[in-house]
Length: 122
Image (tube, rainbow, N blue to C red; front, side):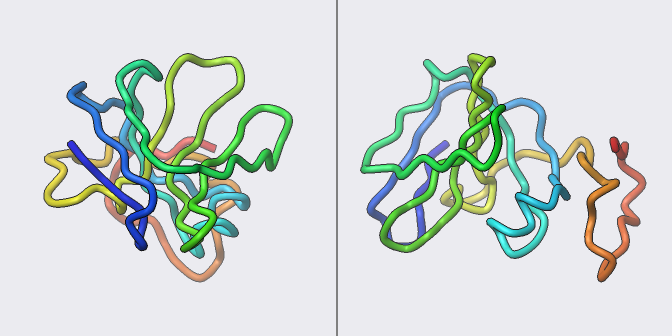
């Protein structure tokens, strides 16, 4: 699986099977992505990133990887975990991944409903 930012300055690749596909509705993801952020994760060692990612710490628990040129929000990395999440919308071509759950739904915007029947976690 390969992906990139909009301008192509940052690319990423993994041969591992991504896990934990989710839609994040937290305020920070909505602010960064302009809406819900869809992601999946792999072990740090299984994701190869090429390009100069700008890391932004929006909280004490995690950092977000952004392309400094086009502004694409590509990665989310908790400080105390050995996994990294990547934006499913940045994957080139079909992903073969199905969203498993919605997270941080207590923070979701009031301008949409979640109506797909998937698990929702506050």
